[in-house]
Image (cartoon, rainbow, N blue to C red; front, side, top):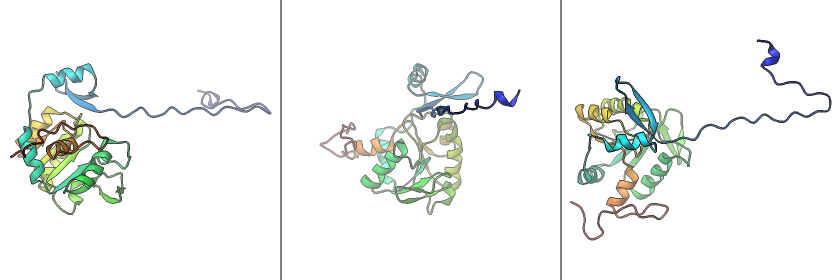
Length: 215
């Protein structure tokens, strides 16, 4: 192919060429992992009809409300894997809440970031100064098994996969290795509803009760 087909035409004397608009990146959407009949997996938008059908047909349940409450009460440290320095990302919002409204020691894990909310970011779980009680995962569903292996390697016992992320095969795999697995739930929402808090924007988080403490 000639070079002229690969480059923009030159402007004639006195003419001004308009800037070529660069297409913007597609918006980031929450996905769930679907397992195909051939055993392969693919990520699909969490809001799609297929994702909703898959959610209705889920067979893995995970810890119930009281078990999730026990996890949060017993935890002293949380590592957010896939933490982002972008204030528009859900991991940033969750990190802000945990730092301001929970007693946890919060660590950020992302090999492509250096600082989030004024705190250092670690490249992996093995680099943390302590073994986290909860590994909170903001990665796509197909990455969850790898994160579980990393959690097992450092001795973590609970992997909490965030809202909108689902990989049932990974959940069963983690449990088979002795992990406690929570999936498709937001640790911020769960902590707030159990402790009587409201969403930072003001709407009700669905507190279980205001009259007695869950035991």
